Length: 212
Image (cartoon, rainbow, N blue to C red; front, top):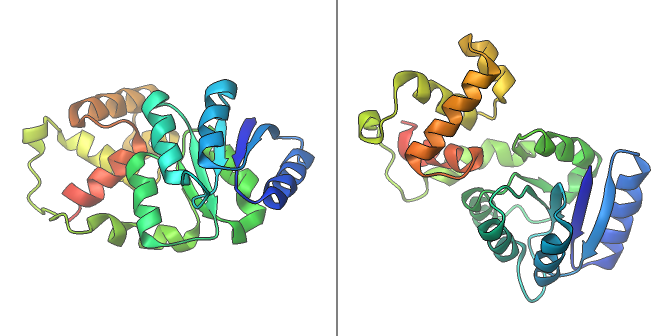
C-alpha cells in the first residue's frame, strides 16, 4: 500500500519510513512536516492512506484533515499521535478520520493501516472504550429515536448499530444472513438518507442520536 507520512518530528518520520517499508507491505511516497505540507503532498500524491500526527506547527492534523476531506471525501486518514485528549478524539471522529492510534502502540501500525485500507475504522483499545461516552457529549440521546422521520427501517437500524460497533460488511452480512453486496447497498442508502459521508460519521450519528 502507498502511504503519506506527516509529523513535525523528522526523527519520527524517518524512523517510521524505515520500519514500515521494512515489512515489504508499505511504500512511503512522501513525508510532510506540517499540516500545510500534508495537504499539498496529498493533492500531489493521492496516497492510499495518510498517516498523520495531530499536533503540528502552522496547521494541526485536524485542520489538515478537514481541508483534505473537503476536497477528497474518500481520503483515508489515520491519526498516529502521543495525545489521547478527548477533544482530539472527538474531532477526529466527527470529521471522518478512519482511525486514531497512539504511538505507544507502535507494533500495531501496519495492522491498522491494513484495516483502514479494507474500509474499517481503527482505534486503539484505550480509545475504543471511551468512544461511546465521548460521542454523547452535550447532544441529547433519544431512546425514542424517530426512525420514520429519517426514512430508516428496522433492518437499516440493525445495520447502523453493527457499523457503530466496528463490524465490517462481511461480518454484518454473516450476522444478518445477507450478501455483502446487499449490506453495501443498505449502507449507501443509509448514508444518503442521513446525509452522512462515511461509516465513521454514521457511528457518530448512532452514538449521538440513537443509542439509548
